[in-house]
Length: 205
Image 1 (cartoon, helix red, strand yellow):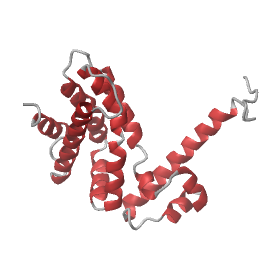
Image 2 (spheres, one colour):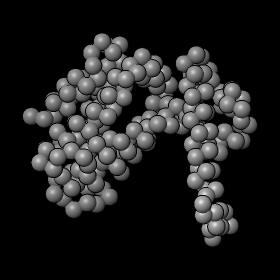
Image 3 (cartoon, rainbow, N blue to C red):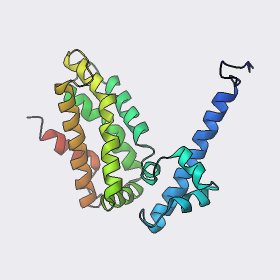
Image 4 (tube, one colour):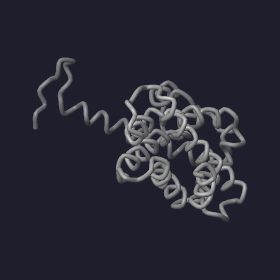
């Protein structure tokens, strides 16, 4: 195995190992926090409690996460990346709006796999303004992942702030939010996928 030092003086092999250890530790903190959030609510759970349960100091906790909200929403960026991958994998001949709807299957299938857990999470988010605001902020970053592919499918030159691509992706995200709110309101008795079909279908006339 090549363990020669890189320009920073660290061995090449050591860097991936540290990265893996960091991801394992983050996953442990998320698991601990999720259990505490489920048991006593978001507002009643402190950073100090999460750190103590995970065997970390408060200072070490903040090396992994900037805020308590970031712990609760840790998987959102990864979910966005999977949606973007699904979007780019759709057939080129598919209408852009239809392709985006199918890409959102990544979201609906994830929540269908653990509906009770997802319903608890969304209930907690709706009852916690700071968490809801941070969720919205993080999900808006999905534009960076989805807008370039929307531009390509529309035959437009990709630009950081293309108004047409951004409008369509933003409308899709708004439909996803509307469907999620309806899913929460009916306590999961209707499928999130069918509610998303309805919300996106309303703009597909």
